[in-house]
Image (cartoon, rainbow, N blue to C red; front, side):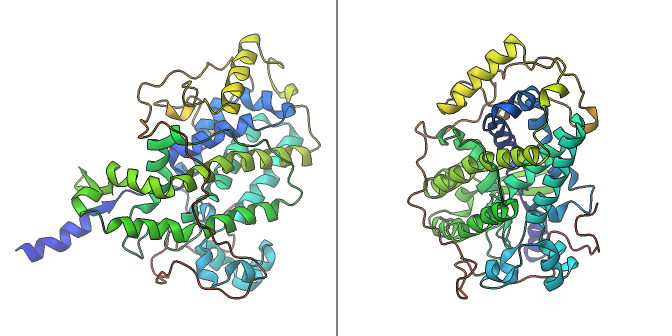
Length: 406
């Protein structure tokens, strides 16, 4: 009888998996990106910041209903050989000629999705379309941020090939939620991207370089934890869901927390740089003309100044100014609901259920994390993390002649 029940129990055991950075991470990156913008854009984006923060998770919410959404969030570089960055053409048309559009869709298109949405945002700036600017800015923000997650660059995206299921959610959701007070959110200001294609591919290559530590450290800690201590279990709708325990997350954070903090700090700068580049490529239109009223109110200016000061001093969490720490970020969930005229945004309130940090001191830059990044002209190398290929079980198996589904 026990043998008969075991397969059923295993079938019902579902690891908790969260795509992207998780809502908390994406919303944090979006808010900080607004602070990283130049003055010519900042007033407009600050006026709509609550809406942008809310919409930053819309691409993940679309994944359930839109069959053309899934592949836009990742690219499984390890599928393309031991030296994928040397073998993979960076231009989409050349990549299609080498691998076919169906293959690219199956193994992910995030770098080309970023470039496509950036061009759409440039057109929206030219047209002065406020609704499109906000919706496309949120989408662009999401895809760029996803490229900063190492687990978005591998077929072993949730550790399912190495018996480490749930590592995706652990890395990009649980750690930021538990230890955000340790992170340095004072990101650098935006820069104009002369070569957006090279910029996003550089992000992906850097993320890929962190994969070895991501998996190896989890495997090392696994030896010290029993199943009961390593995981927590919840039961809902007839399924048993498993996630990493806070105790395991705390130990894992000691090893890779600097890496997670480093990637989360770099993402807002790149997001803001893509927004800025789209705006500049559109001719730097006057965004104040799209605002009603066209200038920030005295109250808005005071809020912005307070938040910028807190951002520069890495005090957003300490001063309860981080929107992601609130129970529900403000703003419409549908881009079509974005008004042309917006009221003065309320200052972020002190959250009642803010995540608690296990440590008070901010994390240092990940100097101790060894990262090996592959060079495009480097000889064929072996990947640090070896995983089995499993072409039969993918995030998105659907075929299409149009990889972007537009």
